[in-house]
Amino acid sequence: MASTRAAARSAPAALLFLASFAAPAAWAQSPLSNEAALALRIGRLEEAISLADRALASHPRDTRALSVRGRARALGGDRDRALSDFDAALAADPRCTDALLFRGLVYMEEGAYDLAVPDCDRAIAVDPENADCWHNRGVCRSALGRFGDAKKDIAKAIELRPSSAPFHESLAYLLERSGERKLALDAARKALALDAKSAKAPALVGRILRQDGDVKGARAALESAIRNDPKEPYAHIELGILLADSGDTDGAIEHFRAALAAGSREAVVHYHLGRLLLANSKTRKPDPTAAAEHLEKCLALDRRGDYRDLARHLIDGIDKRKRKKAKS
Image 1 (tube, one colour):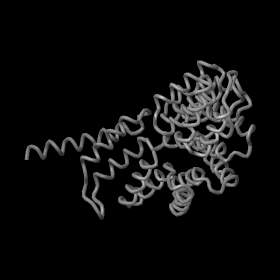
Image 2 (cartoon, one colour; image 1 turned 45 degrees about the vertical axis):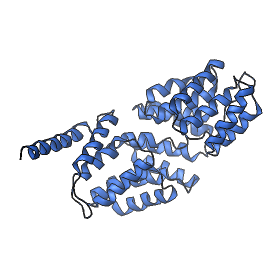
Image 3 (spheres, one colour; image 1 turned 90 degrees about the vertical axis):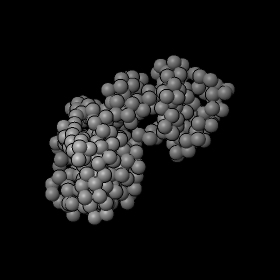
Image 4 (spheres, one colour; image 1 turned 90 degrees about the horizontal axis):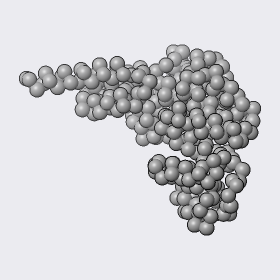
């Protein structure tokens, strides 16, 4: 499908903050580590880091403090120090589920699902009743095309936590990727029933309706997703594709740029931006320089090769026009 990696990366809806932390580690912990975990859960990253620092000052092998600080650093873009924290936690306690889950998340968010799976495996072996472990491994396996294994993992996660809307969202994305569109719609609607403010579920509904030719229904679902979460990149990507297909170049560019601003690193976004920036619109002239930059980014991000030939064809066209212009 045209945006498989977009779907894969968007599917883990509940990955920023896990619903629960693992059982206390073998090493002594500071009470501040629990306060740090709470700060992380509500999105106060600097506070979480500060509290974790204080916890570690008195308890340097506090695995929860190390794990929380690592996750907060990862969310703040400090990848290398985040991984150092997770490694330190696992050196102190190789069975630290928090560190395994959070390190796996770093890899997942980078699209390195093959690196995340071993951490998920270890976390499940330590804590087989932890729904997040099963869910995250299912997301990874889905992204790697192992749909049968992924369904089993996400089904187990839902069995352990049936009221989780994000788990049903992930199941919906998995079913859509594996071609089971009707079941995907059912799962997405189940997610919406559990969480009316979900953004990922209506985004997927919009994608399926767009592919079925229901432009009006697709647009309504995608706009609903963006109202629920203006920073949901997948909804912007899908609405951008819909508008581009409808001839609204300017509107499509706006939504693809919104997807990038929301943190998307999908090849599909850069491909479409590159393609659209080569075209005339009501408000601007073609911009081959910016188009080429996006197409090169597309090639760099496109691990699956979904857009390789298309992007290279457009880049070749830009280069030919440059050489022709230089000669004249």
